[in-house]
Image 1 (cartoon, helix red, strand yellow):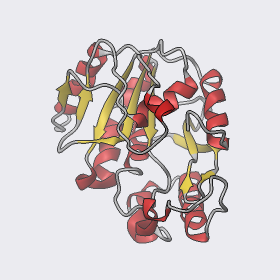
Image 2 (cartoon, one colour; image 1 turned 60 degrees about the vertical axis):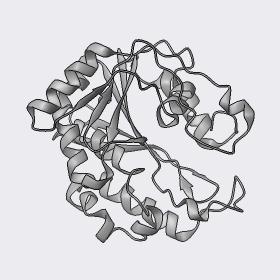
Image 3 (tube, helix red, strand yellow; image 1 turned 90 degrees about the vertical axis):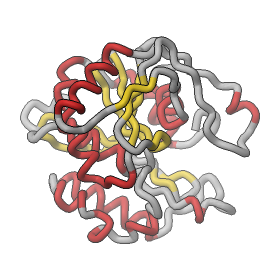
Image 4 (cartoon, one colour; image 1 turned 45 degrees about the vertical axis):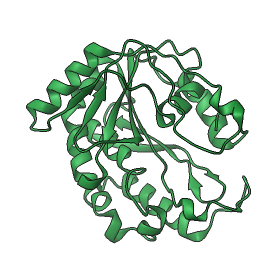
Length: 253
């Protein structure tokens, strides 16, 4: 995405300027899995190139954003007090689930960034609970980004062209998810693996969908969702972007 001209890349390059400038960014990335919640707490973030077989230029990219150790401690305390024991990692930098979108949104790398891990074995309800526990952060100027992919069956990746048409099994899942968010049906979303069409086909494992449940939980009770962007890359990767707003005031959360 940082190097290839796609609709999702173009959208993210303009997104940062559309949002109120955050005091810090908390990225919930599909690419940091732990047994229990963990939050990163470093002074300056290293750039983790946690992928293989791509062009050399991609491995030369760096996103040296400052960290946010004090915010990490606050997040750990909030989760621990809610019965969600949370560790603090004082060495982990930013994986590509965090630095790729942030490099496009905030290319100067001058906003403090930290990451929160996911626990795929604990499912959507656990991640919704994490988000609800962190709801107060939105009043502190913290932008929470759930970074994954709305569909993510990489077994279908080989042989696809960049602009390949979106197959019905991808489109059907994306439309179902959009409808349930628009209708404010979190109970259906939590049960997506049973209710959504082609759910296990699009997500053989859950890690790439779980981050959105954290941001949904953090939006609080009076939320509405808006799909800001919808596109597919290689046909099978839906790069949809959602924002959560206050249903009464219409302000971003």
